[in-house]
Length: 181
Image (cartoon, rainbow, N blue to C red; front, top):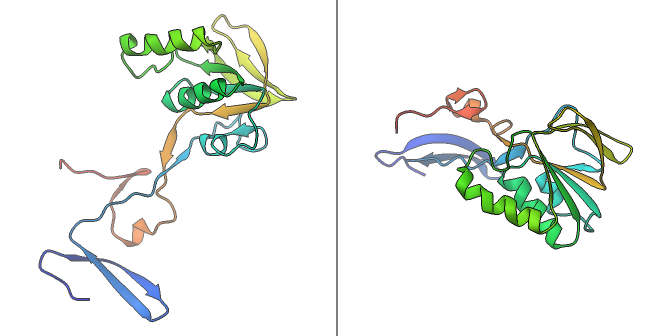
């Protein structure tokens, strides 16, 4: 390889034939993201992330979705259409809280019409003995029976383990630091 005007060395890759210097004018970092785990609802067993929800062997009879954002709703609706009883537990007072209410009201109406239970203003707790502990909007303790609990409270950038520190990539916490362009 040779350096072409405007191209900068990005890094070195070790191959069977020796080291290979990679050069590029621009680099796209597409490392993906990981689901956010709640400390009181660690992933494993019947507590799953969106990744596991896409590869279940069977449709759960009762699915509780923690998080009323688009990932949780999308998967909750899909499982409802497949026959699961679905309850969505959302801490905000409405689903899709980051979006305009006029746009999200039809989604809430569809869910209610199709038998999806919405627990809004509710806080999820631990999952014990086949039931998710929830505090409803009035402060009452509720136990929701569930075969699976799908936690969809957000995603975080996957920036660890890629050698970004060796590539001179400036970081801002877990994110790649951005400039004005």
